[in-house]
Image 1: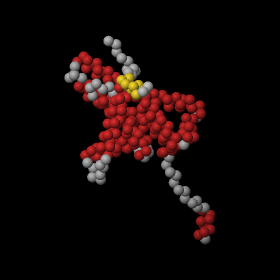
Image 2: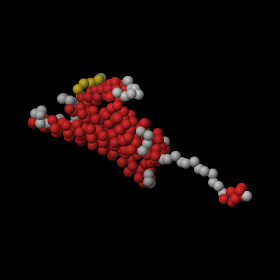
Image 3: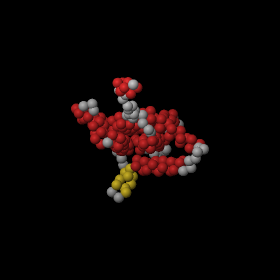
Image 4: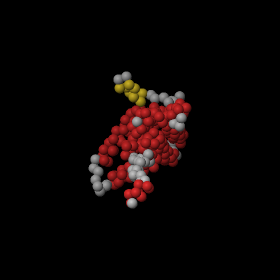
Length: 244
């Protein structure tokens, strides 16, 4: 029996000419689940929070604190993107615990799409904060000779997001699959618990790196403190004449 390559995506159905793989179906299911849960949790918010609302506020507060500490800016414009990335990657990683489900993040195309989203968000927030000319000028820092290296850095750090997430999730799926085939259902339970921890850590790292990349794009303009009002300059000779 031949082993299927982890880079291979086999379509399970077609919508017209478009092939739909199992990873895409699981991704759609996760998206529907997250939207449904968010609507149910936020539809009855009140000044006296329930247990669910308290948990949500704790998560949002922790997320805001992480964004504020990393980027040194108001977290409100970035909360939705960073929070969605973290929760999606977390749920996608943990979906491997459902029998018969392979996590979407174990497929290269899903990780590439997430990394591309981070890249586009970096460009968007950088241009929105600095302006197009100001953001393009950052590629010439500290000198114009660095333009090719800065462009390559933008590409390579996006590629590193793909490789890091894909490698860690895929290795966990392989290890648990091998142990399950050799030892049955009971022995891999500790490994599944470790997989939960690994999935949470990978989701956290992905969200933090996205925050760092976006923060680097907006840092100079966002962190620049407002200039203090200038007090009028008093001339000592004029003061003496006035007092006289």
